[in-house]
Image 1 (cartoon, rainbow, N blue to C red):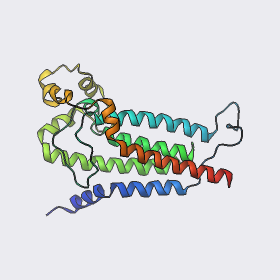
Image 2: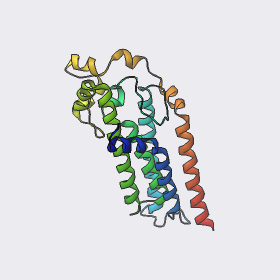
Image 3: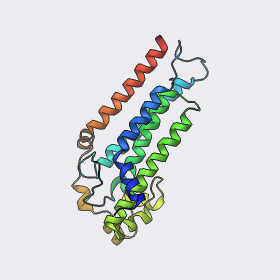
Image 4: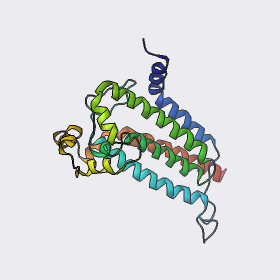
Length: 229
């Protein structure tokens, strides 16, 4: 029988989309920053709204590139309610960090927060909630992968941090690792060559781009409503 912690983790994973939806609704309910007449309130300094939009664009671009690159190295994209993994992916971005997709998700969420709220103190609570949620999901993922792949996962995790790349992991990603035997066990070159192109990976994740576009359109409409009403 699964432990209480196991049941909670399973429930959290199944409801992850719903929880993100609740966070998004809470974000929309907060009054947005708006662009004043003349675009900038001060000609010597970009106002909080415009600065937030610029930060959001940078986060969107970086998160999209990381997401597509990660999708090139993993199997078919699924949004299932249970964990499944045919193989432990340790190449590409996964040679630098264990959870590039969660980093990407966090970047998108923070991008929407900056886009909607500008550079303000309201960003802090949303940032804390989103980061805490993604960290919780990453820990669930780690426990699942360790149970399934055992020593192979532990060897990979010992040189690959969860979120912040370090020198050893970067060398694996760039293919300049000193220990060839360890490299072969963590990153199978034959597996790498069988993955998607950048274009294929991008279109394979079409649903993500649709929901991202949809959410941002809602935020734009919210800004327009506040600005003109």
